[in-house]
Image 1 (tube, rainbow, N blue to C red):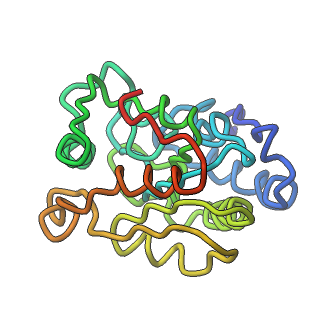
Image 2 (spheres, rainbow, N blue to C red):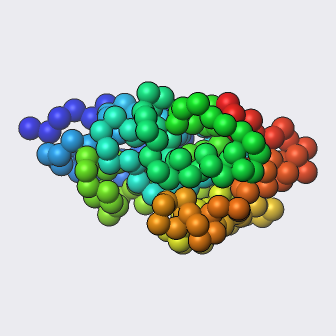
Length: 219
């Protein structure tokens, strides 16, 4: 018997066609997977819950949630506040943040960014525990494409780390966006162009040039 699905469409995004034409099928596929699925039910739309479409100013596009139990909580690159040590990609993000702006953060919880209009969106919103990429072909791509199309109706800063994020964003329309592209912060690639890219100050300069308040990356 399929376990009940308790992830409800975020109210501010519920108008997207995915939620009426695709979500029930995808939810059934997730429920049919006998493996533990991360993040837990009720947290899979956290990024969309915290950052409604009319509040999005910046998009940081990730891949899939952390496959380690207790880490993923619905935001790309973010982890639950009690997680220590940090995942290595997030640790490298923090190294670059410190080098860029002198900001040192105390936990890996990035909900403070999300509440300021930074949409921390993964390309796949679920993952089987211990199986990175295990839901990459499950059907989340339709939702992600619709979300990107929605936010692209207004000038937005897109932070694209790594080839996968950059390929995913090739169809973004609209005008006057900022596209910041670099290597992924993974330990395998961070020294090939992520370190020294200074994305945080670049985003803030762009926002300030448009008359908007900068992101408080320490929040």
